[in-house]
Length: 108
Image 1: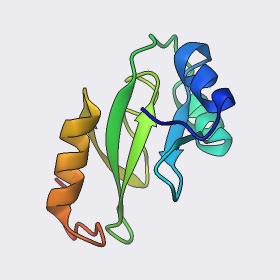
Image 2 (image 1 turned 180 degrees about the vertical axis):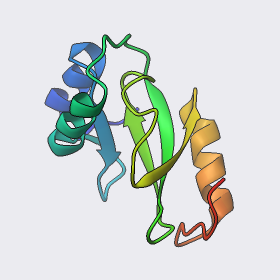
Image 3 (image 1 turned 30 degrees about the vertical axis):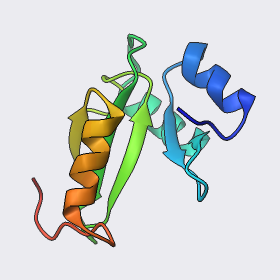
């Protein structure tokens, strides 16, 4: 997988459970705000198992691909519908099936 920097890759490999979003070039970038928010909602303990999540905003229907370094970090959210995948290929396939832009009018 491609990361934005060696810093992002190190956090993904051995840091605390965290959230990563893709930047405009497709690299995974650590998201401190998302990570702090989710730690507050689910403080753990968390096992290090990278997981890919499609997060659908309930207000707009917009779907975003998220990588979390623990499957228990993003299990539920008050503003998002979530669908988890064990691997990136399956998550990307499901995201592509939604269409462009990735707007899902109904939750899955």
